[in-house]
Image (cartoon, rainbow, N blue to C red; front, side, top):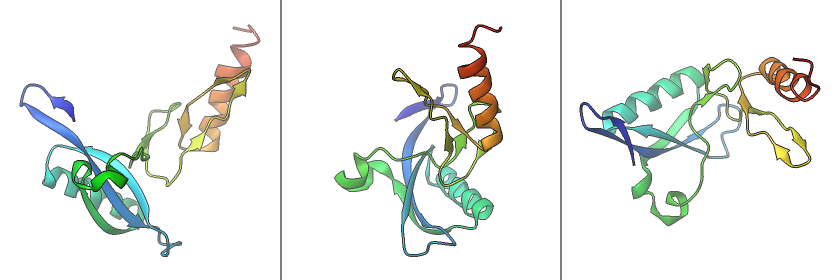
Length: 131
């Protein structure tokens, strides 16, 4: 659990959402997100479903999901683009992929355009000392 709003004493905890993609109805996809209570979680799940047209199967608190899902590291429900700081709801974010001499980059992006801009500014221009 994480402290969300110290003024009001609200505590966020992880919830898990199980859903299916409109194009792949045979596979169940799991994502995690932070919410303070059931109504906050319900609002986030409905917003996600409306934005992405996915079919929600169920959602519940991660601590009540048993050991299989409770101990699993799941991707977040909404990602934040490393380059433009926008929230996005793609099933999988575009990853940087930089791996020069094992100096990996864990950046995630909403589009290939943001990935290309990041790659040029952070891994090409910075490393070539053209600043």
